[in-house]
Image (cartoon, rainbow, N blue to C red):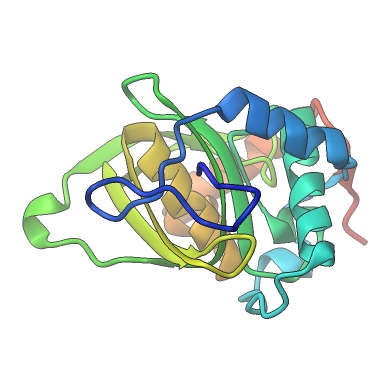
Length: 212
């Protein structure tokens, strides 16, 4: 998302989608420099398994949360992070994710809602998926290879974000988080059990919050 810091305007393309591919490195670094990395919550933590609260205050506290989320995402080497993945019960996610063409997308979405796709646009991509909250585990999961999310930016302005390929998967994955769903909840019982086994046998490369 390319945002004019001086007057709050948002750059959009000809279709009305936010321009989130410009100055990605500089914007991500600025968020991260202001933020503090926090440990990642993992499957079993109650905050991950319920719908989060709507963001209603677009204030300095939200801005600090977003900065911390970018810092946490970088530490964990992720491409997307939802607020409940650092224990915060709010509908906001950040992303710094490439699409299948290698184009980098960086931005923030508050109160995201996935738009329904027309049947002819629902082309499924059955690729491996992982999650910072299910560390070291991966499983194949079919998702549409195109996604549109509407919501608000960090100042409360209405936005729409579109993604293809890997970035579309990211948008769907992070929106799911804020409604209480992990990707493993979309797997068969056998596949979910296998993912949890992978997690149990692996060692996260980042700090996590132990479940009591």
